Length: 115
Length: 112
Image (cartoon, rainbow over all chains, first blue to last red; front, side):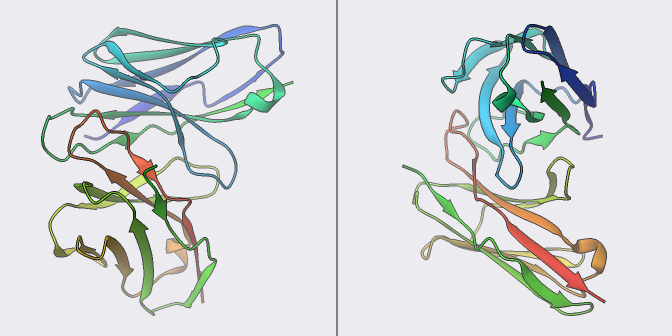
């Protein structure tokens, strides 16, 4: 089973709203990722959690706040977003097997629209 | 600056033909190479990974890696209209703290 789930599938929010994106995997993976993808562009890495600790933050604005409550869950808290933040937000996970091929599996994504 | 380059396409092939998708990368230390397929509006789906020089086959798909030339390709045999999608090449380094670097993707169109 290589399933990563994400909720919600679609989200429309105003610039003053607070919302959260959720991601879950039950593959025993110890690395989880948030990506942002704009139309016709490749995914852009935002955050990486390794063993539930934030290991990479790609200089993402503070209006995006990640959280990893446990090894299976990853959240992305959104606050005071801008219209240019509208995009497909992808969660991925990988085994985090050091020194070997580490394959990332993507969830279906959340389509976010900021009005 | 680690880079992965792909021709954006579209690459148009007739149904039943072989589609050849190419990718070059700049970091000689790269160890793992991945091909993802992405349908419009959907998330990337892993097609294959390869980390040894040579060919790796899985059904209609063959990945080819040449580390000396820093080149990885994906061949799709007997192309079907359902193969029409964007194919993303991604490259990872030896350390698993390295990021997965994506190419910009090649759009493949298979026409009946």
